[in-house]
Length: 391
Image (cartoon, rainbow, N blue to C red; front, side, top):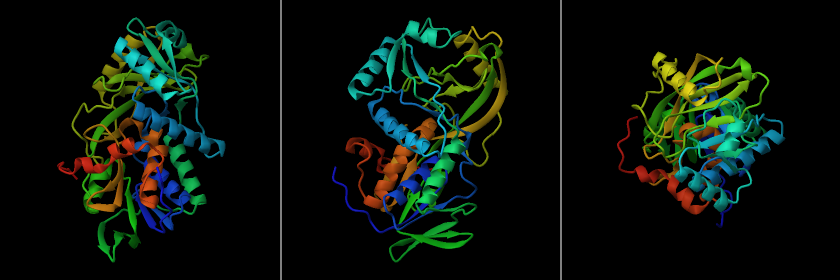
C-alpha cells in the first residue's frame, strides 16, 4: 500500500494504558508536530496494570496471528534497548479436538511462522508434568513466548515516547470537548488543550470518552479475576504458560503462568462475554469466593499431579471488549479526526505494539501499511454506526 507523507498535526491521546502509550510513541516516531497524552490518573492504573501480562503468537486465527507477530517484533525492539524485560518462559495452547488441531496446523503452515510448533499429545504431557492430557490432541507451542509486567511495558512506551518528544500529563481528565476553527479543544483542569487529531485510547472508559468527543463506540467490560497458585514440588522446574482456552470455543477455561519458583498466576480466560458489562468505576476489585471454588475445581481437573498446590485470592481487572469480539481501531466516519483504539479484550498487552502503530498511522498518515488492508478495514469503528452505546 502506498503511504502518504507525514502530516504536520498536533495529536492528543486520551488514556495512558498500553494501547494509548504505544500509539503516542508511534505518532511521535512518524513525525507528528506534537503528541500529548492525557490521563485522568497515572499510567497503567487500569486494565494494563492488572493484566496477567501474557504475550504469545499461538493462535489459529490468521489475522490475529499476523498482528501478534508484528507486536512481538516491537516488544523485542523495546527489550533490545533495555527499556523492558520479556520473560520467555514458553507458552502452550492446548488443542482438545481434532478440528482445533487441524485448524492450528493450517494456520502455522499458511503463515510460515517460525514462532510456532504443533506438538502431539505425548510431547505436551512431557512439557508439563502433572497435567491431565487424556483429552488433549496436541498443543500449539512457542518456546520464545512468555510474560511481562504490564506496568513495565507501559513504562517502556512512556520512556520511548518521551525520548521522541511526547508530553505526558497525569491527573488531567478530559472534562468536555468542542471544535473551534477545525481543531479539537479539550477542557481539562489545567485549561483548554487543542489538537488536530484525537486518539481515544481510554480502555474501559472508551464509550464515555467517545460520547464526550462526539464519536459513539460500544464497549463490553468483562470482569476477570486472577489468583495465585503455590506448588512447592515444582520449585526447581521451569514450566511454560498453559492456556486451555481455544478462541471461538465459547468456554471460560483455565490458564496458568509461572510467577516464580513454585508459584503461578491462574485464572479463567475467554474472549467471549460471560456476564453483564461492568462499570469501570465501581466494579468489584476483589476475588469472589465462588470464583476461587470454580478455579480450584478446574485446576484439580487439569493438573491432578500438583497434589501440594494451594490457591489464594489475587486481584480483579477488566477485559474491555467490543460487542462482536473484534478490535476497534480507526477513524470515525462522522469525524475522521477522531481515532478510536480499544476493545482489545484479554490480549491488550500482547497486541498493543501493533494496534498502537495502526492508530498512529491513521492519525499522522491517514492510511495504514503496518497490517494488511482487509484486516485494517475490519477494525474500523464504523461497523457500530447503528449500535446503542451506554456511556
